Amino acid sequence: MKRSVFNTILLSVVVGLLVTAALSFSWLLRQSPWELRTGGVVRLPRSAMFIPQQAPLMVSLLVNPDRLENYAQLGTRPVARRAAHQKFNQLRNTLLVGTGLEYDRDLKGWLGEEVTLAITTLDRDRNPSNGAQPGYLLITQAQDAGAAKLFVQGTFTQAALITGGELSFETYQGVELISQRQPQGRQLSSAAIDDTVLFANGPDVLRSALNTVQAPSLSLAETTDYQSALNAITEPRIAIAYGNLPDLSAWLLNDPNASEPELTQLLTLTLGVTPEGLALQTALPGMNTASATVPFLTGPVEALNWIPPQSELVATGQNLAELWQQIQTELPSASPINVAISQWLGQLQATLPGLDLAQDIFAWTTEDYAIALLPSTERTFDWLFVARKTPTSSTALAHLDELAAAQKLSVGKIPLNQTTPTVWTQLVTQTAKPGQTELNAQVAGAHVDSGGYILLASSLPALQQALQTRSFLDNPGFQGAIQALPRTNNGYVYADWQHGKPLFEHQLPLLRLLEASLQPLFEQLRSLTITSLGREKGVQRSTVFLDLEA
Image (cartoon, rainbow, N blue to C red):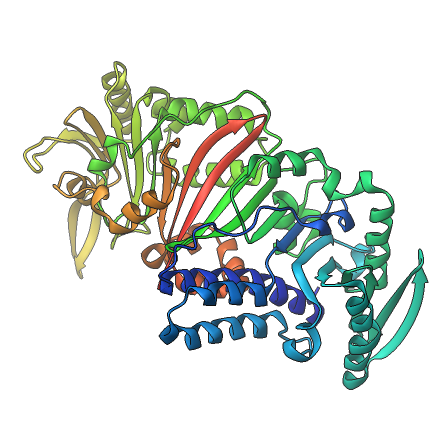
């Protein structure tokens, strides 16, 4: 199905508003001598009462654009105020892209503190013959009920007449619905309820929203997972997003059949701003166990001393064996998170056929560890695994050597940087000149014991980089990120977006779709860092720091 222009309008409104507001406010905080570090407001979106429990996605902006600008301008140096005003004009233009409305003329007088977009259903008519027909609902809060009603009856009607669209009126549950059907067949419907203005891509979506309000137990606001997730996040925010990951995957693929109705993997996140960048607080409810886990690390682990600073992706923590067991038992097997992890590990395992990462490596990694992907000129990436030695390390490495030998690889030792790593190689023939062949040894993997740590790599260059003096703790981006993240945590995942973008896009094709929708964010993104904050009452908490260009 070709997505309608209304789809594009709503995505531009909310995604652009959310991202541009965050980027603008973050930029202003950097220019301001005041320490505006609260990050936003502490409240929940009222709009959730209109949204059904099964909605794939809800995104809410909780700060009025004008109030955001006025607040930020108070602490902005006079020389920077013009640039600051231009930033907020960009925000307003993004808000209204493709609608035919003007902010100062149509919205400024009545827009309140909340703007929400929801995908209410993946297919409105559930008719496979006409493709996927998602339902989109845009909810805006007005400063007062009179202004909201005036907008719907006056300005909305005038805009429809200018575009030549056909208007129709309907009264449903005492609420007047106005719909505009344009010559191209697109439809835009609107209604005002007290101080709330609703827009949708059809009157059926509005009727469903009104039915949800009449039956509160069916609304998203009343769901246990929604309430428990937001109760777990207490940090100030300027926006909230809530979604079911399997349904979101199906929506991105534009295929409702890709979703599994019996599977739910709900993710809630809030967006706050800091002078250094953006901070996302995440909550993943519905874990298979309600037992609590408390973060116990108070700083980066020593294993990072062997990770090269130019690494493009790094995951680090304590007791990988326990973490893997938690992933296997607490996340549903069909969860998108579990599937993504399994696919990535499958690519690593392909380096040595017969290797079972869970049994052959993870099981003996009970102390601190680090995993890294490094840029390579010979392949898509090189990988490096570092783990503190345990009583079973030597036996495990001997088993890896046996697996290599079983794959017809030569197992031997060579000198490298004052060490003698064990190297797995295979002989290959290459044609040098017509009629001439050369016999070369290709390295399939290598490992070495260094300073009480086991270093396992996919190539000799990767191992050589690990044995050099500089470490990942010298990476300024990582150092800045951990300063902005909670001190107590369960480890980090760091992604260098600027340098690793081609690798990430190759490994995760859906990233290209996200980039298209979040272009302002990805254009300024330097790196992102994720840290786990443990689990309480069945809700897994994490914080994500987005480092942005000034």
